[in-house]
Length: 227
Image (cartoon, rainbow, N blue to C red):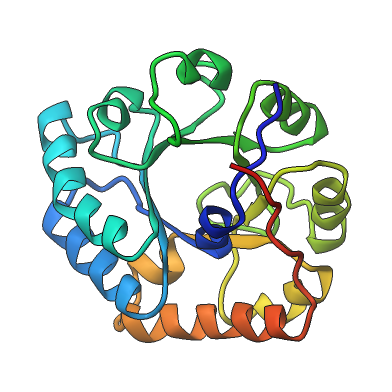
């Protein structure tokens, strides 16, 4: 059954930081805290190299920070860690469990997000009860150099066809965000732009500032109203 995410929770998805999978927990904690100081309210912990205990400890350190500010700490694929109360939800990939199956053991109001790359995958995520999807790659990205980018216009057309927040991912930077914003993305997700920044706080503030100005000007979609 399709899910409608509460507007206040959905607002946290405006700028999502995705960690880069290197497994350096001290570095992750430092960058995340700096990004939060710059205005980021959603982080997806994507660290497949970490053992369950290490990942649980990292999420346990960061979870209270996001809870206090009404943000979202999401863990990639590890629904068990979310179910343990160490994250606010889970982000599912192409090889993960289906969102409706994950819902059977996650307490409400846990957030379930799904990675998507086309209309078929978005439609399946919506039907499965996902709260949001990430759509990628929107721009050309070094993470997946052979992937053909959708481009902002195609991403906008896909996002407009579905009733849940669509967060754009892939190659988005401070420099190309002015090219993207006229196409009214609900939110953006970044990895290297923040993880590799010399000053993550300043970069986060710049990204959030651009999104906030677009929102105030009425050029980004409003959050859906729901649970």
